[in-house]
Image 1 (cartoon, rainbow over the protein chains, first blue to last red):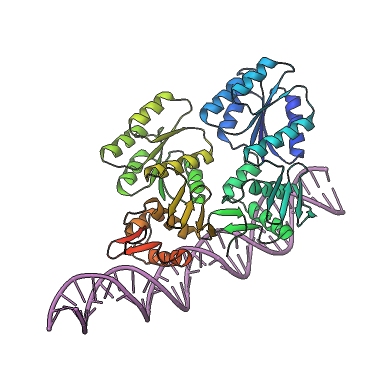
Image 2: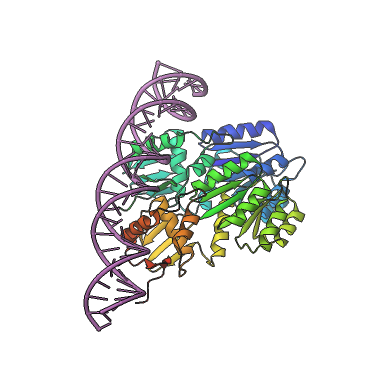
Length: 221
Length: 221
DNA sequence: GAACGGCATGCGCATCTTGATCGTGGAAGA
DNA sequence: TCTTCCACGATCAAGATGCGCATGCCGTTC
């Protein structure tokens, strides 16, 4: 899952970035509204964290532009404490959730998770495909109830596929969502991780559609 | 489905081409307006992606010429960001949709899909013929609700037929839309794939019209 | 130094293609 | 109407192609 943070205060921004990376997200950080807007328009994010108190362009303006451009990603807005007017304005402009500064990083992560879950149309924090279960809250994966140890990248890849189960996902799409900007597009890392996941969870979990991509949901032979 | 991209910036062009090929399209790429216009006039495309900011000939001119020549294919225009005048002019000149640069590849694909769908007169992303259903979004095919595994080429062929159900489609037309330029036209690949699809989906799905081609929609016996 | 992520290589096999052969529909003639 | 023949399409099998897989190594990080 790939996140964009638009936050003008460098320290807070960096801290958030590393916290979220620790939680298993691919994170891009933008320090002003202009650049942030551009990134959000260009790249594919699964969620955006947007500080309203930006210099240059106002956060609300950025949000508004995105929505006018048709960007669908869920946006979590950060506001100064007790700024009710900001909150209302933010929700009007198309924010999906909001959080008052200062906040606990844990709460941020929880809300983020909920946001992404809702956006992909899943009600619960557990995703099931076949005998594999993935809990987005705890970040745990089980096979037939038995815990399986996945590395960070393996988890990201599996998680994305499970959030889009049934859909045929191309390698390009996977790369765009698992890595942050600037990643060599012609390398076989995706294949390698698919192989490793299959070793841990069984061959049938991820099915290959030659020439198109990968898909969850066991193939009907 | 066969797409023409007219884009002067080589990197973006190549990237688009490979992304769209990954999504299952046959793609021709042209790097200048003159050549692009020629290709569009000569070959049969299901959709065209046209950058307005071309050197030599302006993209609008190209579009205008095509329309004057009676070319009907849907055109998706790429414009510089926030260039409203370009947008208006493009739509006036006969563009079917427009997308501001920079854009997300996924959005491009979604719009392209919608364009092709609309052009073939379908409202939804699901195409139904008899007991066969094809979902263009997820790239899946079901027979009586049961998923059927098709290879990339089989899918392309079936998809084209389903987008033109009822119409008699000649073998030449199929070849032109499933492969990109430079493909040996006298071979019996089409017949082979028709046979294979029939094996997977049933004999009656594709009916043969001798001397003319193939058609979906069960024959009236 | 252990674990993980990324990269390169060679191999195997699914898929595509081709050519050859078989089957069949339809026109023409009796 | 029936028969014959021809051409077009269907099917099959073998060969070529290239995609995806596995493996091992190296650099980096913790």
